[in-house]
View (tube, rainbow, N blue to C red):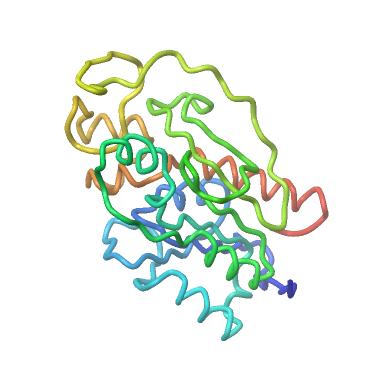
Length: 242
């Protein structure tokens, strides 16, 4: 791995690259952790709250590496499409013969991230995505109204794993024709007793977009705020600015 130097002016927040950025759930958490953020997503994301490049995330990352522009960044967060290995695809949908084939971008994402020489995380939901589960986060760890387990592979650094807090009950809504009540809302899909957009916003801690698809694809900002603060603490412990 080629180690690159990150350049920034004294007193300036470190710059973070947010790949497959969607509407900015991860980005907002990193802002709260003390970063400036640049995003990249192939879809038009008018609700993304920070500077944003529209285009293929892997092509853009390859361009940043080839031109040396990647040296502007201190850290990279990547959330490649997760449908290939997520629990719903390989579980319920597969058992019912639903769904379709999905592209797995985790391996090519990791290959390019390793080429940057920068510390990074790759985020994926529970399922069969082939990442190291260096960190698993849950909404109950942060007092949120969603469970939304997410796994993170940390490249080039170590992130502490907080204790998994026991859930207080079920996710509200229908499952296989039966309705369940509970303290959490289901942050996916539309039918089956799913929450309103306002309920989703409150449960996730996201108030800058009211697009249901963007809310259901996002990770809560509390997750990335935890990661960002842990990363900056790890750099500080080594006497490295970040």
